[in-house]
Structure formats: C-alpha cells, structure tokens
Length: 224
Image (cartoon, rainbow, N blue to C red):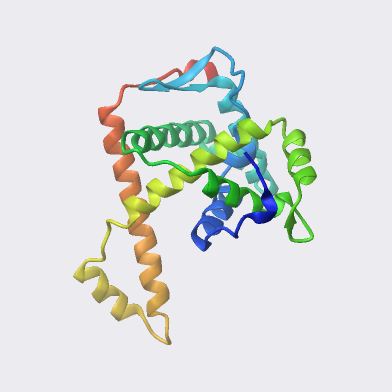
C-alpha cells in the first residue's frame, strides 16, 4: 500500500487531528490487533459483523493498562465495569462500520497513506521511516495489512462521526446560555464545547437507534 512515499503530499489537518484522537484517546490502535486469524469464539455479533473473544481481550487489556498508567488503582478500576465498557465500544464500532458500508462511505488509498506517513509513531527526525513503521507493528504483533485494515476502519468511523456531528445545531436556548456565561473572550470556546457535547450525544443517539434495527447478539459468558 505504501508506494512512492517521498512523492506524497501532507495529509489534511482534519485527518491529522482525527488520527491523533484515534491513537491517543482510544484503545483501538494498540488494542484490537490483527484480524487475520481470529479465534472462532464470538463474544458479539452485529448483523454479519463478528467480534471475536480474542479481539475483546486485547482491547480490554490495553484499556486496563491505559487506565492503570493514569494512576488508577486496581480496586478503582474494578468499579468501572470495564468489561462492559470495552464490549460496548467494540459493538458501537461495528455498528458505525455497518452504517458506513450501507452509506457507501469509504477511505481512499491516498487518505490512508497520508494518515500513516504523518503519524509520529512511524517517523524518524520528522519524516516517515519504513523501518520504524514495520518495527513498531512487529512489536505489537501486527502485520502492515492488518494494521492498515484497522486504520482504514478507524478513519471511516471518524468520517461517520463527523458527518453525524455536522447535522447538529445549537438551539436558541443554548445560545442564550452561552451568551450569559461568556466573558473575557470565552464565547468561542463555549460554543465549541456545546457543539462538541451535542455532537457526541447525536452520535450516541444514532448508534442506539441503529442497534434497535440491527440483529445484535452478545455472549457475555465468554468474558465473565
């Protein structure tokens, strides 16, 4: 997939921001791992999309590690219902991918390539380095093919959430609240906070609506 890297232009600002969020704010990058040879045990199925138990445990272990590194104690993490949270995140991911496929939303090879070459994890002295790329994937038990498939899905999900979020508008009441709270040049920041929260709620509502339409099967016994 990575052909003639030196001739590619830099990715757009949107893709850079999206990729940064995907890698830093979620567990998907280092969590799920390859799907080349998944085990047969299925912890969840959404229509024809399957979530294998191996995927779940990799995602769970990575999220557990991420929270632990923030200073959370074991007893505190156990109160978070982490298994349910991780499983729900994987289900929501699958729902969005199905919706994207139905809506013919995809990622081009150029978008995928730009995202990879502009990822700091794969750079040396600010420039993409193939050796760094392959070594990083190897250390995380991933092949370029499996990683690129996963990253493509992540970028598709980002497109979906962005499109859903763009349908939201602040109500007149919300604008009044912002006006009453803003001061010292903070109105713009408040507008972004309100829009972000409303967009997140819209995405959540969209996913929940689709889950009611899809055939969703969960087998929690596999992760109990």
